[in-house]
Amino acid sequence: MKDQFGREITYLRISVTDRCNLRCVYCMPEEGIPLIPHSQMLTYEEILDFTRYAVSRGISKVRLTGGEPLVRKGIQSLVRSLASLPGIRDLGMTTNGILLQEMAAELRQAGLHRLNISLDTLDPVRYKALTRGGEMGKVLEGIQAAKKAGFGGPGSPIKINCVLLPDTGREEVEKLRAFTQKEGLELRLIHCMDLKKGSFTKVEGGEGGDCPHCNRIRLTSTGILKPCLFNNIGYDIRILGAEKAMDAALRNKPAAGSANTCDSFNYLGG
Image (cartoon, rainbow, N blue to C red; front, top):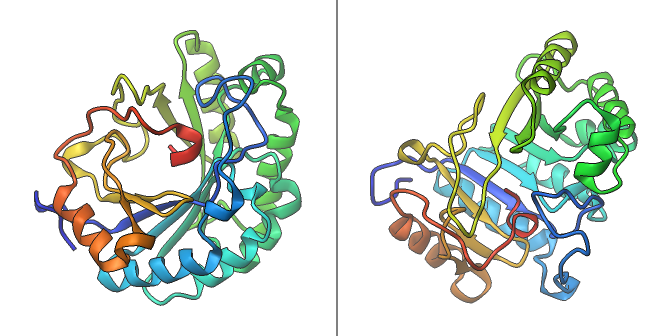
């Protein structure tokens, strides 16, 4: 399945909710934002139906995001259903890790292959400030629970997502690098992005932000299929149906990201 520029599209990112149990400074304002009514969110059945179609077109990698995906009730059942779809070779999730200690084993048993866990610092005071109240200890406990559950082995890496802010010091990054090496984790450095200004760079240690080789499309929690994170284009799968929405996304996926003036990171999943 190729877009108009010949890029092979094999990766679907699915935002299952706009809700989150943190208020990270680079993601949303301290007071939060108006939440999408539950009635407007895709049901798990709708997500599964669309993913099944996307896999039939060539999608082989799926990642669940949020908001924070673990706050959506019954997320384990969605993981189990997606994991059973023939053709999905890579099923991952991006999480802030706060709820992982209690959910890691069940997610692994449900068929989740890999985890990306957000951790921008190893300083608990700075972590609390960046997340506006989060407890870093819960994330560290979640990482250990994930390792115990079987994540982190061959073919099932645990990646640590660190957002580099203007005041992130080199020493802070080196501490994270030493921590990930000691724990057998992979570190991804993500330069702070701005949707509305259209500022982004290639992820260090990852594939995001590399427009000429972009292989992804995104499905929001309200059913909008977006061919690019940094673009206002989107197609409603409920109105158009899966086939027409997919065709439109492939036909109109831009050569490179520009700016997104109508969405937020907690809604899109980053």
